[in-house]
Amino acid sequence: MATHYTTPPQRDSWFAPLSIDMFVKVLKTSFFHPFIAWIVPLCFRAQNMYWDATPMLVSIFWAAFVSSCWIVGAVNNRLAFGLPREVDLSEEVIVITGGASGLGLLIAEVYGMRGAAVAVLDTKEMENGEARGVTYYKCDVTDKDQIARVAAEIERDLGTPTVLINNAAVVTGKRLLDTPIAAIERSLATNLTSHFYTLKTFLPAIARSPVGGTIVTVSSAIGHVGAAKLADYAAAKAGVTALHKSLAAELRETHPQIRTVLVTPGQLSTPLFYGVQTPSAFFAPVVEPVDVAKAVIAAIDNGQNAAIGMPLYARWVDWYNVLPLGVQAVVRGLAGVDRGMETFVGRAGERQVGVGKGKGEPLIQAF
Image 1: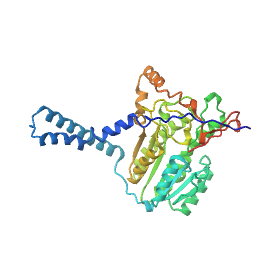
Image 2: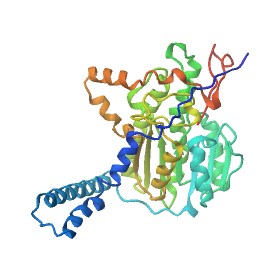
Image 3: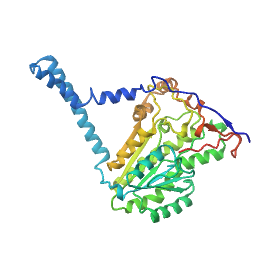
Image 4: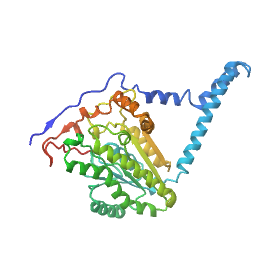
C-alpha cells in the first residue's frame, strides 16, 4: 500500500519561550523566595528606616508570609513523601521501558554516563545506536513471556534491578469509531497492561535489594481530562495513575524502602505526539523532554518519593474535575484540548496509512 507523508505545521515563533511557567519560575526565585523577601527589610534598615515605618512593616510581613509558605511546603512534602533513601549509582541497576528514544533515552544516557547500569527495553533499536553504560534488550512489553526472559538476562548481565521506569507508550490518534479493535487492544496493552507485567516481574527483585529501590510511572495529564481522538490513550493513562497511587499505598505499608515517583506531563515534544499543536503556547506550553528528565533524575538521585507535573497546569489539573460541569465545558472549549489532535502526524513525521490490520490503521509506535 502507498505510504503518505505529512509535514506538521511550524509552531516556533519569537515569543515561543514566553509562558506562564516561565513567569512563575521567575517569581519563585525572586519575589516569592524567602531569601529575596528578607533582603527588602534589611535594605530599609540599612537606610536607617525605623522598625515601625509602614514600608518596613509591610516588607517584614511579606517576608514572614513567604517564609511561612516555604516551611509549610517543606512540612507537606515530608508528610506526603517521607524520608529519602540513600542512592549509590554504582549499586543501581536501572530498567527503562520504551528507552530507545525520547524521554526514556535521555534518562538512560545520563545514567549510563554517570556509572549506573542501565537496561533499555524497547521494540525499536536505540536512536543513537550504542550509549555508554546502556544495554539494549529487544522486548515487547505487552508480552509477559518476553519480559520474564529479559528480566532473567538483566539479572545475569547487570545485577538485581533497583529502579524501574515505566515509560513505554503508543498513540493511535484516531476517533473511537474509526479505531479498529486490534489498535485499541494494542494501545491498552502497551499503555496500561504492560505496567502490571513489568511490576509483577521486576518488583520482587527490587524488594530484595538491600539498598531499596524506586518505581517511576510516566502517566499523562490527558488521563485526568480526556481528549478527542485519545479515548484509548486517556483511559490507559487514567488507569496508570490509579495503579501508581494504589501501589504507592501498598509499598508504604509493606516495603517502605521503595520509593515511588509519578510523572504527569502535558504535551511533550517527543515523537509520541509529533505534529500536535498546543492550543495555547502561553498557558499550555509544550514540555521539553530534557526538563522532565532532569526532574525524574533529581527524584531518583535524592531517593525521594515524588509527584512531578509539567507544565504548570499539569500540577493543578485535578482541580478541573472539581469545577461545575458548565464551567468545565467552557474551559474545555477555550483550552482547545479537543482540537489538539487535528494536526497529529505521528512518529518521525510519518503517518503510514493502509498498512495496518484494520483499514486506515496507522502503524505509529513511539516511546
